[in-house]
Amino acid sequence: MIQRLIFAMIDYYAGDPKRIQHFLKVHSFAKLIGQREGLDGSALRTLEAAAVVHDIGIKIAEQKFNSSAGKYQEQEGVQPAYDMLTALGFDIGCVQRVCYLVGHHHTYDAVDGSDYQILIEADFLVNLYEDGASEAAVRAAYEKIFRTQAGKQLCRTIFSI
Image (cartoon, rainbow, N blue to C red; front, side, top):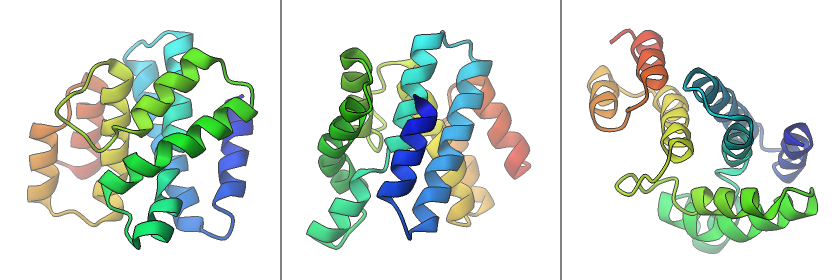
């Protein structure tokens, strides 16, 4: 099912290789961290689905608000995520959790589960690189954001901090 979701998101972002590359990298890191942290099959599947669709709201946010700001991504991402996941046959529990994560993935002060924490860490790993973050910014993110052992290890190793 994750493979079908990935292809649906590639179709959704047709002609936008930057967005496609981004969610594929976030998915890869989320899956890697989730596996290393010992998530069970169901939790890992939910995390993977969330990582694939986490930024689905950007397209609508840019159309409506001419902005990809995190608050607009969260606001506009829930409905298209719900529609895509239900159309692909994901179970309702997974769909509800993924929609919650999509609607909160830029909110860092109310993390309520491993899937949420890992999604944030995976997105940060990719964004720090894509945004060309300074060493100071990477260190600040490491201290404030990263909580899992796998995420911390990846951050230290990738950015040599």
